[in-house]
Image 1 (tube, rainbow, N blue to C red):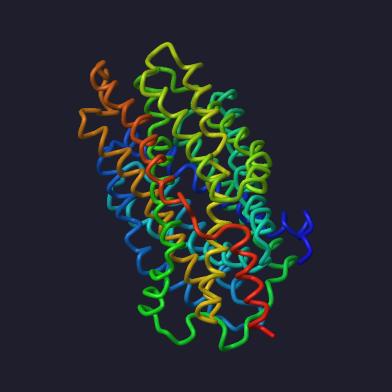
Image 2: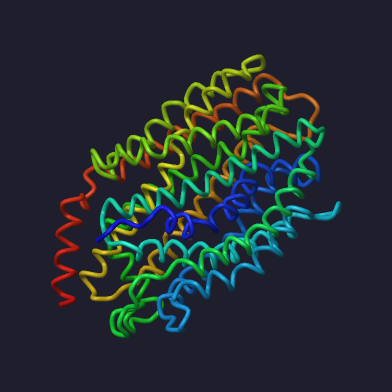
Length: 445
């Protein structure tokens, strides 16, 4: 199968340039903004964002199954992506630009709708990407482009925030309003580019699509019987929650431990720029040693460089920024390698069942990522609060700082290490995947 052209890959990946702009603030800006400036207790903020993901348990598998079964002239995936745009834009504005008097319930409700809109866009987008190619390494290239474009959107956003800070606009409310405006303007344009210039993959025959008539719950049980996919679910649960803990606490650590909150936009900008530049290196490593080994290496890199954060205190801002940037250079690779491996695992299900259920699998996959993000935000909010940290207080004592930095650096390192264990001896290597594809081609003849 021939490789996709860079222009086609860029057009396919275009919506991620803006949807990623929404994903970043939900972890890095919104918790601190609601807790510090709007006065919502930090633990309540974490609980609200975590509770907003409960809807995903129902909506993600449902949307995945429906997109698998779609038969319209516009394709299976594109209509759902377009449908999600208005809901996503409205809820982004409500979360990022709230009134002065808001509650945890307000945050939970609008966050739930934001995540629903995101699911309508992102889930079919990932399933579509898995169907653009069946080649083991080409899939890494496709997911690598999508994650690189997403990271580029975040880098662009952070560059604008740094510029705004230089102009005196450094308050979280002004920053979030600017982000919301960019999303509302940019997403419709990029979505139109994507759906009008890139064709979907080959349309499956009626008896080879969706859940093959298994029904909703039996379809989910079938997904649960795929051991390689369950391994991927396990590793990503630990990986993403560990990263989300740090994302939740970046700004608060700079403010209350380093007493240098103004460095936050610059730090995150440099971190995202480096992770973008590092994508080709991690892709090359995966081509050399295989995806699962490269993913283990990326997680180990992040874990090792998280540990020094435990010991940093006021006066170490430059060192903290250096460590955070180096540690974050593997983050985009974790996302694109994991997504590429998930697509490969779906091929095994197709071989065993004769059914193409990319939407259902990526629904479970997306739900796992979102639950992991919510768990990370919850842990990053509740654990410091339980250990005595109050971001609205005037002074944070040395003992509380030590406990906060342990949550910030030590717990994510441990979670990354546990997640890597799920990939030890991973069964779906490049050679095994080639056998699966050969058997699929034979069965299609």
